[in-house]
Image (cartoon, rainbow, N blue to C red):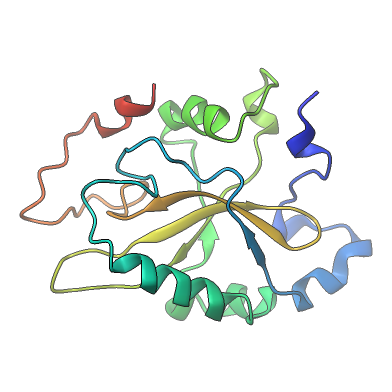
Length: 170
């Protein structure tokens, strides 16, 4: 039995009526499943500037004060959205491994969400936090997508990111 799913993840837009007050909650961030594999979407990515971790902490501090409804209604400010893995099926086994999900059924994987940490136009980066949400507003962070690899095809001009960057996790 996978104890990390004793309190099952939920999909924010399809909440049961008993959870209507969820939109009035703010996220509490948890690093239980934070990926530390040294890859390009991990917290110990050797390619990022360590001072950006301070920006990450500030972002988490600020986000913990914002209601879920405000995140949903202000895309331009937060870039908060779900992560569609259907066009990147190769990431499903990586996610499954990262969150120690024991079931063989990919359809039961939790919905992932992405939110902007900061944007630095000079360095061509826009890091995102990737997480899933439990019913009590607990956001379990999985990845620090420093180069916005999960969605963007615009990589930093000086950074040579190979198309097979994800093979590090397999």
